[in-house]
Amino acid sequence: MDLKLILTTFATLFLAELGDKTQLACIMLAAKTKKPWEVFIGASIALSLVSLLGVVFADLLSSYLSPTLIKKVAGVGFILIGGLILLDKL
Image (tube, rainbow, N blue to C red):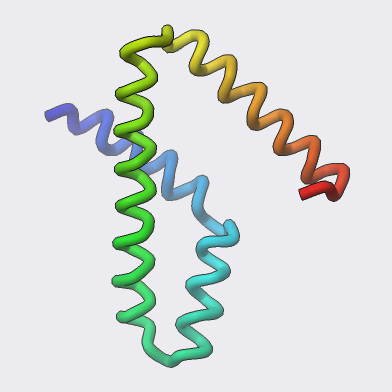
């Protein structure tokens, strides 16, 4: 098991998720329902499943495409999404 990869993944996702819409939705749900543990459990399951889907999809893609191509396509996708957000189209 690669502990360095685990810690890098944790740090990257932890920082990326701070203050995003998922965290804001959890704050809102926990405040509204007054049931923070239920919200935490539901959010944890959802984020785990989304992460699993991403890893499985990446594993499948990497069987057919080079990591360089995947990185370039992901970069273009991020730029497109950023542009759409900047232009208030998303």
